[in-house]
Image 1 (cartoon, rainbow, N blue to C red):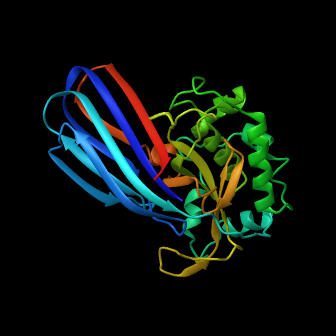
Image 2 (image 1 turned 90 degrees about the vertical axis):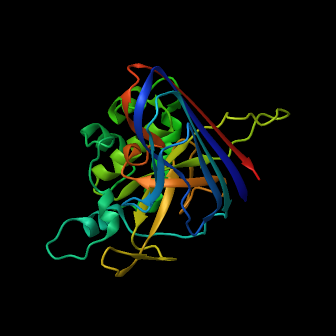
Length: 308
């Protein structure tokens, strides 16, 4: 499937910002299940400098600086991505086996998946997460099947409510009120998995959505999406290199509790992966440091995903 994505972010400032430094995570990565064919990033006003680099997780990030006063910032990212359906794989490792494999032992071989075992700013440890996930993540249960059930449970138990949370709402709050948005659901599932010693990472991206029957596709009606990826060390199909260049088997399987979808490497060919990290804070689409501007600013974000 070939998908075209337009992601537009507009800030308005009162009073004007004098200088600004920004970092954007808006360029989709290339994986075995998606190939980035075209990408452009337009910034208005024109930045004084702009360059792309690769972060520690392999994502492409763009840094740009604005040296002139401005009362509005418009950032438009355009992408063309070719996606393929996820492969059919299976994993038999139990929750206890995976947990024990990643438990710390002196002198053990390092796995990059271990970077996603620990709490992070948006993913906390709390008994409430363990209590919620305990029935799914039983020690002797197949982790792959347990994640499928946990995804389905969250889809049934939580209500998608865009105005119920903000970007900074703690995952524990979203768990208690049983509602939120895709970012909240991803953070809750990550807290559940990491609380049991299981490696899981945050994935940001897009999802092709269809308009109601007989209605035209709405420009900007879509939004950024987020889901979870879990490492299953006994799955085969690709080889993972650790930081020492040693080949390690294992696959990441993606789970989307917002839509009750899952798949190896991607929940489906209608998904586009932009970046991976420990949580939302690692892959914020656009963030910056401003000089001036005060507290009077507004934000508008519009995302359009459509078949090319």
